[in-house]
Amino acid sequence: MFGGNYQDWLYRALTILVISCPCALVISVPLGYFGGIGGASRYGILIKGANYLEALTDLRTVVFDKTGTLTEGVFQVVEICPAKGYTQKEILEIAARAEAHSPHPIAKSIRKKYGKDLKDGDLTGLLSYEEVSGQGIRTIFNGRTVLVGKAGLLEQAGVSLPRLTVDKGLGTVVYISVDGDYVGQLTISDRVKADSRAAIAGLKQMGVQTVMLTGDNQVVAKAVAEELDLNEYHADLMPEDKVSWLETLSQAKRQGKVAFVGDGLNDAPVLTRADVGIAMGGLGSDAAIEAADIVIMEDQPSKLLEAIHIARYTKKIIWQNIGLALGVKLLVILLAIFGLANMWVAIFADEGVALLAIMNAMRVRWYNSPRNSLPEASLVQTVIVVAR
Ligand code: ADP
Ligand code: MG
Image 1 (cartoon, rainbow, N blue to C red):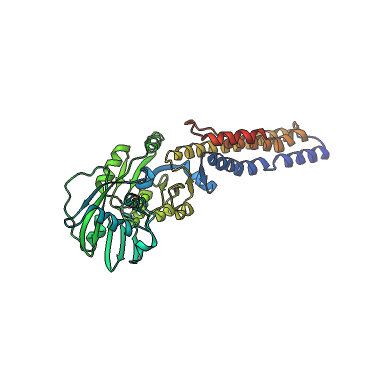
Image 2: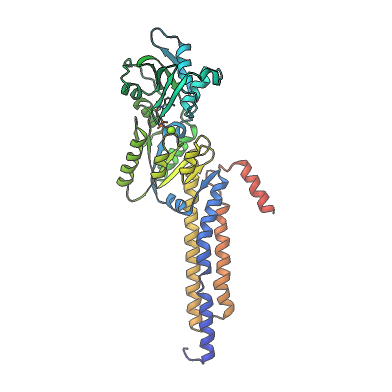
């Protein structure tokens, strides 16, 4: 069988050379990832690189920010409690002027409750403005220092606050002080997104741990964590505390990747630090969208489930392609060694398998979620693309 003349062996050598060309292998892996990224974009999920798609397949823990991520972030002022000597209208005006420039959802709700447009004229007395990340606002207005924010911000400045005994449930309390004196407080309520429940339940089903890190107080954090049945939560955190918690979680769960999902207000550093930083594109700040590795366009945390499904599907197809390419090539090389494969078979093992691998990789592009949440518009778009 190993006989034959010089010409036979030259032919076999050339046949093996054609078979061993790694076209299918080289093409199908990146193409699979491109397909995955393209498929995800149909669901409004922007993935900034194949490495993040890969990381999603190995997710052990997902850490969520609370405000604007798990909750709607559309706050409503539900209670205005002025201190003695002040009226509701007065403290709302003080707070609205101090919050005039803040993009935080809390600030927006205070301005909305105030109702009137804050014109430049209303703000002429504003001498200084400082947004204390994850805490509140410090301003000097008409020569008086105004603080608006969480209890810690005011207490640090030496303001004594009335002890609260009432359970405020989901309400976040915003305290207001003028020149070191407590002048009142606003209770602002937020709602848990209906979609957050689906996201947390889905992640748990996949065996992924869910954790919430929030700058808000214990009471609110506990209410949200219980409502969503989260595995773990940590409240009253400064932005830097969120980073150290994330590092603790990454170290503890070394066997898998840790993702952080946030809206980027006060949490851009954590987004950068996580293995996979995921930002909400609708509510999220530009800084967050820039810092994130994955952007979810419609602010739905459950889109993360689709992203994970697509990532797993992509990986499956890539392995299928690798198996197909190596399997067919090995088989045909063996046949060629024994003189049983001609050049046409070799060309099939090279170009043919490459084409098959490309077609297989294209399947990711048309991935259909088991949750079937593809937006109508994308379906129409898909049909048009196919028709072309
Ligand atoms: P989360 O971590 O839940 O997303 P943030 O870090 O954005 O929350 O804010 C944490 C807390 O800081 C808020 O619950 C609020 O009490 C206070 N805070 C932050 N920004 C402001 C602001 N602009 N005005 C008033 N309070 C604020
Ligand atoms: Mg936030």
